[in-house]
Length: 141
Image (tube, rainbow, N blue to C red; front, top):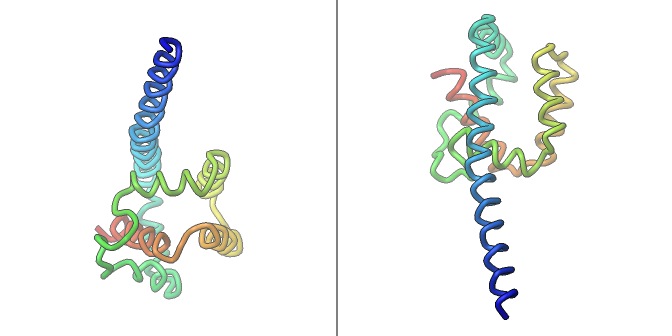
């Protein structure tokens, strides 16, 4: 009986640690990744280039502007950290890393479309709308 209590106690501690790592780990990962990407984009001047590219491409601008006037309280997530948690559930770390590398190296229009199709196939319409809202806030803040 004592062994069962100890075993249950250990299981509860492991679950609590796992939840803590998941909850705080994804926030840490989101902050780190977004911090690195944002710093890299700003220092290299690519953020301004992205803004200009969005301004020049009416289709891309319309796509992102779908998130402009959305009531974010009704979306499945409102922050980068929450978005990261969702994306980590839908994509494995290897896929996310590959996307990050590919984005850093530059993508052709067909590669961008393929990536968008992949993302849309794994996310719900509400999750896509939430990503558009976050993208709009980041690009046009």
